[in-house]
Image (cartoon, rainbow over all chains, first blue to last red; front, top):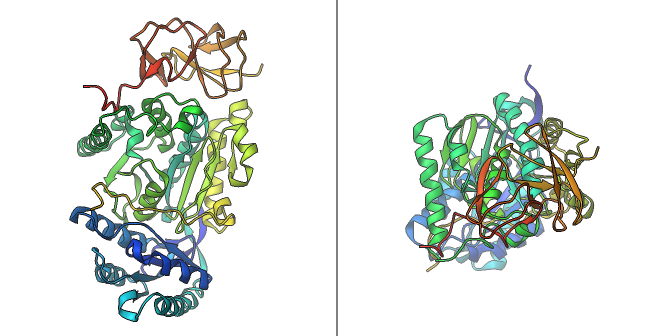
Amino acid sequence: MKLEFPGYVRDNGMVGVRNYVGVMSTVACANEVVRAVKNNVKGCVPILHHQGCCQLPPDLEKVENTLISLGKNPNLGAILIVSLGCEGISADKIEKALIKFGKPIKKVVIQEVGGSFKAVELGSKMVAELVRHISSCKRDKVDISNLTLGIKCGSSDATSGISSNPATGVAVDMIVKDGGTVVFGETTEFIGAEHILARRASDKKIVKKMYEMVNDMEARAKSMGVDMRKGQPTPGNIAGGLTTIEEKSLGAISKGGSCKIKGILEYPEFLNDRKGLFIKDTPGREPEALTGFVAAGAQVVVFTTGRGAPQGHPIAPVIKVCGNPKTCKNLASHIDVDISSVLRGDTTIKEAGEEIFQKIVSVASGEKTRAEINDYNETMEIWVKGPII
Amino acid sequence: MEKLALVINPKDNVATALKDLKKGFIVVLDKNEKEVKVELCNDISLGHKFALEDINKGTKIIKYGESIGTATKEIKKGEFVHIHNVESDRGRGDLK
């Protein structure tokens, strides 16, 4: 029998591990209203970013599609869209796509309702009704194949590549073998390790796309005419013992486990009903990478860290796993799974991986992560490739 | 006996410290089921690397059995291996 967890089964059959109303800003200029609404009503999460206008059409489309995908995430039971009214992306398109997907959607347009005070008042009332509406949804037992996990490493050091990342790889294999789904990315951290990942692709098209994706990322870094060191690896990574991007990458990819890679997703892409292990084209930086995984449909994220990173994400609980004994002590209030015993030789990678797996199931069932308890969840961003104009 | 450092792959020419280690320490390592003894030329912090053998300038530094960059100067056995003596081969917009 497959492992089960209690989740929120939505009308479209998808399963959330949290039950929030998303208050979604369509453009940087609507963020203040979103924040005020969030402060007025309990049970909602803010979807804030700095995109949505004065960008070239491919980026505008990317932002629009990423917001639609975020709205589809099953942790959100309903959504309020907050638009300024003159932005480059279309709030109507987002609204239509999410209504079609079967979610309760409301919209408020700041310029149409008479300014920010009115938008906050109307938006707060709308969100209050949506919270009332979704709060009757109860958790029901579902099997683990309904789970989509995002995986990320951040503020990495040399312990990440020898403990927390390979241990996460064990948990990833357990989820994929049980019929679940895992998404990983951070294309920058494939540089120097792409040939190893390529061996795990389930067909040649995936290999070709992966090399194109990595070359594109490296070419953009090189276009600045400098050595990318300090950008990647970061000064923090370097202080933690990581010398080059190749070393960082070789340590990073082990968190993806050992299963075949089923496909590659563009940044805004939502998985829908696809299952298995997928790669998503994202940068390494946390706010953009986490948003990419949540936009794919991840209800939970495992985030390995060496030096200690506090942030979560508004839509999905983020589980912090750490293998560095100094960090586990210094930043204990940010670490959910302390596997520093691996470095001492008291715990095997497999045992640590099983502990991470148990934590994923527990968090999916309702256990709160440190980032949720600490209320450190607002930072997010949408990745764009072109200039702000 | 407590493990002080780790050789991840038998092809590696560097090891990773599993705790803060002092200059002059003699670290006994397991490489390809053979015992390797290395006397440290520098203090090596947790997570940082030292050379398992003498490494010539221009030689690839191998960790996880794969290249992580190139030695920019001669590195002695037991010496600290990091950004002062290793450069990346990737993402180098500064090289034509």
